[in-house]
Image (cartoon, rainbow over all chains, first blue to last red; front, side):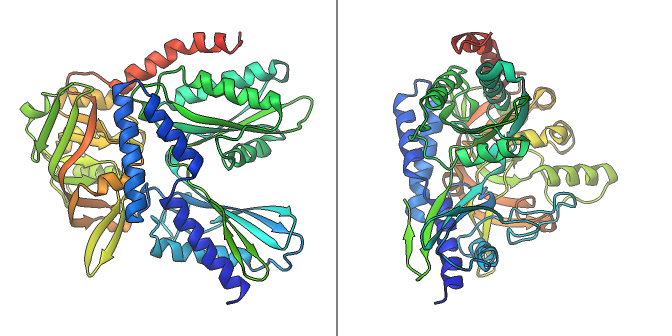
Length: 289
Length: 200
C-alpha cells in the first residue's frame, strides 16, 4: 500500500476511534464527577453519560449523534518528505468515514444551508498545519459538535486589567452558556496573539489532556482557580444543577501587542472527542491512546 | 420527585400532571424536528399546505439522528437531543397551532415556550445531551422519514419508541422553568465567585 492510501486509511480509523471511544483523561474525569456529585439530578445525568459511553464502546457506535465538523491537526516531520497528497487523502478519509463509521453528514453551505452529504465542502475538513521532527506525520482528528462550538466567544479586554479581566470574561461566558454546551464541559482559553490567534489557541488548548496542567506555574495555577470558580456556579451536569459544570480548564498563550489583550474561548462538551496517529514514511502506523 | 409514563397521544389532563424536576418516560410515536422543519411546518400551517405528520397529542424531539438504510429499512444509530434554544423562535406558535403535548430536547427553552406550554397544555423535557446511544436503544422502529430534502439532521424522522427516557421535566404546564431557576441562581452567585477570584 502506498503512503497516500496509508494516510487515508489511518485517518478513517482515527475518526472512528474519536467518535466511539472517549479519551482516557475525559472518562476518568467523568467517573470522578459521578462519584463526587451531590445533586440528585446531576448524578442522574452523569449516570446516563457513563452508561452511554459504555454502550457506545460495546456496540462500536458513535457516542453522540452530532459527530461534528471534522477538524484535523497535522504535524509534518522534517524528514517525512513530500506531503502534498495529505489534504486529498484526508478529504477522502472523511467521505469514507461518513459512510462506514457512520458520521452524520453535518457540513452545509454557510448561507444556502445546502448539505453536501459527505461532511466535505469548501475548506472542510479544515486542516491545521504544524512543523515537527522525525520521519513521520502526526494526525489528530477532532470532530467538533455544534452545541459547544456555538458557545465560543472572543473579547479584546483591557490590558491593564490583565488576569482579572480574563477571569471575569470566562466566568461570564460560562454562566451565559448555561446548559447549552452540554456540561460538564472543558474550557479552552487562548490568551494573547491577535484576535484570530487567541481563538486558534483556545481550540488547540482542548487538545491537551485535562489532567495535564500548563508547564508554567502561573498559567497552571490560573487553570486551577478558574476551574474551581466555574464549579461554584452550580450550573451542573446538563445545566440541571450540581457541582460539576466543567471538568477542566486549559489555557494557552502567545505574546501580544502592548496595547492589546485578546482572549478567545472555545468550549468542549463532555463528549470531548479526539484521536491521534503517527504515520511514518515507511508506512508504519502508531495509534496514540 | 414523581415519575410519569405516558403513551401517545397524550391528553391535556395527563400532561398537566408533572412538575419541573419530575421524571418522564414516553412510549408511542415521537417525531424529530429541528429549526428547518419547525419553520417549514409553520409555513405550511400558515398557507394551508399539507403537513405529512399529525402532531396533535404527540411528542416532538429536537434531534438530528444518524440513520442508516439497511435493506430498504432505516435504522437509527445515534439519536441524542440537540440544543433547543434554536427552536425558541418557532416553538410557541408550533404548540399553539399543531398541538404537540411533549417537547424533548436539551438545554431548555425560553419564556415564550413556557407561556405556550402553560396556556395550551404542554411540557418540555430534557434528555441527557450527547447520550445518543442510550436514546437510540429506546427506539423500536423508524416508521418513516419526511422532508428528507432538508438533509438527514433536519428531516422529520417518525420514530416508534418504548419507554423513551429517563427525561427530566424542565418546563411544566404551570409556568415553571427549571433551567431558568438554575441560571438565575448562577447569576446570583456571580459577584461572590468574582470576589473569590480576587476580581473587583
